[in-house]
Length: 54
Image (cartoon, rainbow, N blue to C red; front, side, top):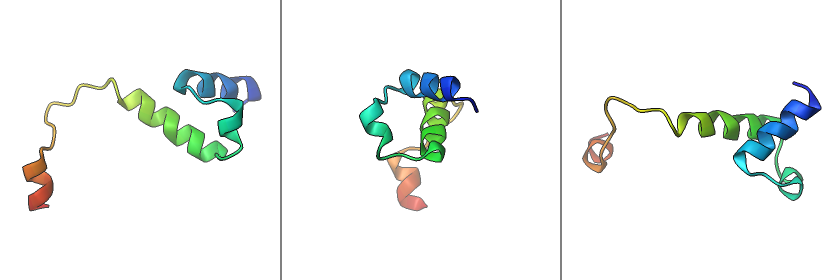
């Protein structure tokens, strides 16, 4: 990943340069991946009852 692409991903998820002092590249990639999952429409979502049974 290039530096401009990395900084673009940081901007897309709302991270500042100050935040990057506390995060690794891997953590930023994980945050970006989860950000992409936020808009996904799952067919079935777990409820609190499902988690309690788990």
